[in-house]
Amino acid sequence: MFKSHFWYNKSQRNGIFFLVFLIIILQTIIVFGDFSSDEKVDLDTTKVIAFHQQIDSLQAIEIENRKPKIYPFNPNYITDYKGEQLGMSLKEIDRLLAFRKTNKFINSKSEFQKVTQVSDSLLNQISPYFKFPDWVVKSSKQKPKYNVSSSSVEKFYIKKKVSTTDLNKATAEDFKTISGIGAAFSERIIKYRSKLQGFSFESQLNEVWGLENEVTEKIIAIFKIYEKPIIKKTNVNTVTFKGLLKNPYIDYNLCKKIFEYRDEVAELQNISELKNIKDFPLDKYDRIVLYLVAE
Image 1 (cartoon, one colour):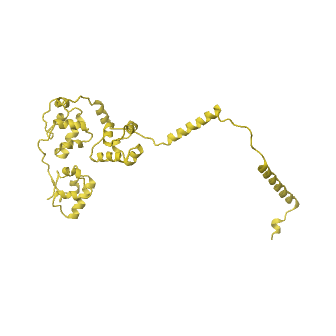
Image 2 (cartoon, helix red, strand yellow):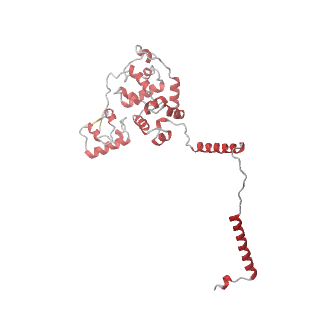
Image 3 (tube, helix red, strand yellow):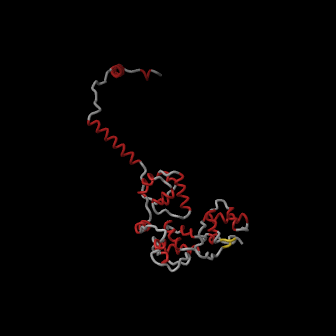
């Protein structure tokens, strides 16, 4: 059985011996041969240095290209992930998110720093990418600057006389007499007042979308709440889900929690029981109960 595999004729055996001989010769040359060169390469030549500089510049370009690019964005909608990418700390991000939960908006980089308390260096780094709505940009450009004088508040805040200083009776034209308020803002204040069925707290002006704190202070300096509005209250025990959502301070999630709690206790004996609901926004309680009653 081995004969067919190991039996060769003379020419085949000579070919095998010659192949083995060549292999031995090549191995000997590789092992014992000296292929080193005594020629030294000067690495300090102008060409070599220029070549290394070119490689370094290409590496720098590649590293820069791999960095995440920052595109213009509205700072009011920074998420945890986005804030971390920008270099903000968790506390700074939490301050921004807490501010936004109050339904307020940031309309300038100075206000962004005031809310988040970011450092000047980080603000200078990311503020060029801030993109605010066009009406905010136009408003900031048209906003006149004044020197505040404590002895002449009326002259500072008012462009002309108003028909009334009652916050709940003032017209759009009255609000437009305040520096920094035009037709858009005055109409926005009127619409929000109608939605609330009247202002019960002067601080509710801060809830008007886009209205800066400085402008709000100007309004409060002139307009006051002389009488609380008469608000039609809804029975929390009989109101429908859709009807409860009409409360300006109740969103879908809170409405759902109130209904779940109402099903659990069968009937609320006192409106203050709302505070027993898990994660109930206690900071909005005094505003929410303006529209609800437990009967």
